[in-house]
Image 1 (cartoon, rainbow, N blue to C red):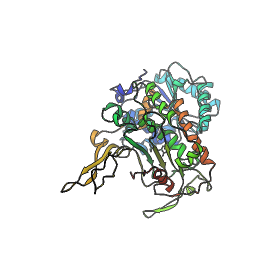
Image 2: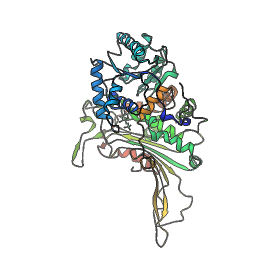
Image 3: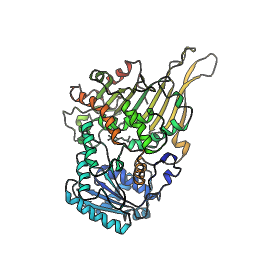
Length: 505
Ligand code: BG6
């Protein structure tokens, strides 16, 4: 089955998966236990999995099928936040879990994997359909794809697809090279580069809001929009991922992928249809319209940061250099802010401000669209300068708010900002699927709408790479913000130069 029209498919979330096996490389890693297995368990709980569905965990840890099942049982208990643990559902699910130990760089692993897949195909009637999921160290992606090809696993009786986790490449050249290596085994149409932000309900809702209503789109352009602020703040530090994080940094970890995809969703042109190809074409077109910064622009339109230790609310928070796995001299950015411009008729001259960071005061991801002020100031003596804002809250407290001015009751005319709010939780009163549930289901039914394509990944690197290179060559005075604060002062100055200020979410 190949469904290409998810937004017009009323049964999108009622769909059941076709028979298939999912092979997870990196099965002893964090993502498998925190996100992938809990998402698959939830799909089993909701009875969306086909009877013969199977998962084969692959990693170096020596384990048997039973050992893997035991570990995954704990993972489901620990990380299935909003799903009850049900023994019957678990037992049926666990019968479909298998394990193969080995190193992705070792061709013998793929021979053993091929044998296991053949057995599973016979016993569980998976029809030869296989989804390979690479949740490995990025340096092992190419070896794993080529290993699959070497063992003849890139093709089979059924369909074969490859999901690749982020980061996809370290820069434009390595992203291109990785795609070329993967294409030796899998066609682009079988490659699913995952960006879990695109699977979030609230990010998908941006398209529903923009293109399902008539009232927003007429305002959605340079004539009415003054500027856009995209914020993804996290209060946590690097949480045991110091070694990975100090290689990546905030710009590559969040902006190159998640936030540029969010920006593309906010700013793209309407699609001709909701077929995967149309939606991805429009996202790609928008990403290619973002102006890469020239060196002198990078100095004023981008700001890196790194947090230092602080005492917040009686708690001692470590600085980045004190985090486990982080080198005491590390110059990695734990905060990144940038001003982007889109060179097209709709957005010319409208700043898109973006910021993300670790150890900020709270966890919040939102997009704030600030509209131009009224042409004349008729009212005085109140909050008449307060801007009209449309705020799309991605997480937590998912919803949309419109901020505008209203007359305060009483004699005289005094204006006060008020808010019109839509809240997901109270409006729908039902659970939203996690991003990984949505995306796994999509990959299995062959719907790539919410996955990134080679041209999109390359367009994002083309925007981010010049900034990355310039930052690496500059000796910044780090740390430049205290843990628990909203980032470096230079980030405020970046907006102040255009008469703007970050909103406090
Ligand atoms: C991941 C990043 O892709 O996204 C992490 O590697 C970050 O550093 C995470 O914490 C944020 O995701 P979410 O869904 O919690 O906003």
